Image 1 (cartoon, rainbow, N blue to C red):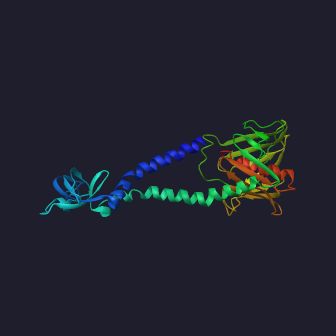
Image 2: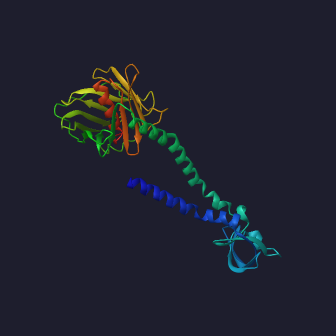
Image 3: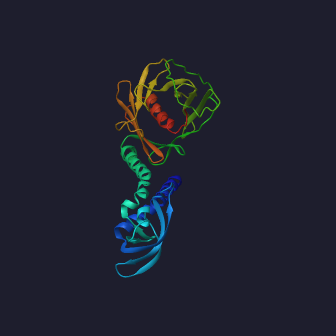
Amino acid sequence: MRRRLLITGLFVIVFCAWAFYPAVLAYTFTGGERATATVAECSGGGGGPRPTTATCHGTWRTEDGERGEGEIYGLDYDQTHGRDDDAVPVRIGPLGPHANGWGGSWNYFLSLLPILLFTFLFAWTRRRFILPGRRLAESLLTASGDVLVISESEGVRRPDGSPYATVTTSLEPPPGHRRLQLPGRPPYTRDQPTLGSRDSLHRFQPVVDAAGRPLMHLEHRSDRGLHPEHVLLDPSGAPRLLIRPDTERGPFRYRLLDPAGAGVGTAGPAENGNMTTLEVRDAGDRPAATAAKLRRRRVLRIEDGVPPLLRNAAIALVLIKFVNID
């Protein structure tokens, strides 16, 4: 929460700083007091033999008769050189008189386009991905049945806050660990910064219930040139399930394979491909579990009658979301 507030506050500060001058100009051109300025002296601005802007000083008089003097903004070269009449209509704003209105300061408003585009993309992403996933998570949290709440800091808990399981991370395999190697692992062509100078990195997560009994172990594999994959091990360290990326179906999709390579189920985004959601299906394509992100937690609902292996696979898939492995 604190980090999110810090990021939001920083974004607001940057946006306000970036938009301050264009906002002042917009106020000046729409609500500023009308006046007539008399140019006293100017010096050319810009570059090249014929500058296009000018820094000018002079006096002005408003329609109410008030007078002022100082710098006059927004004048161009043609308005300050070679003219017999140096009276220029201006608008008086918080920063002083500005000439030529919107057309004379279009470049300042053009500078707003990047941040406006970023704001539009942020709003679209929030509406397309974050809000639907959050609504699904809230509905799962209040649904009847077997519901778990999983977070990186608190492990696996029931909706009432009572512990279901704790999760730790280790580079050492559990006692009795047996390696599962199945053919057909898809290649990976992107950079793999997690590996550093290594060719492979295997990490393990013991999952222990509230009474201290091991429920399962998770093995996370990262090998150079190959897609990451994950193995669900039983308490004795024997492999029970391989979670392998299904690159043919698209990103964030997985195949669930038993030690013999037979399909046990599939997993992928729910909610029309929303990557903040997850749906697990059995070998018959029947729903087994659904999960969605709710802020820094993920809510998982497991269907009635789901076999223990698929139940553990659903928990493992949610935990994988918190593992930085590539």
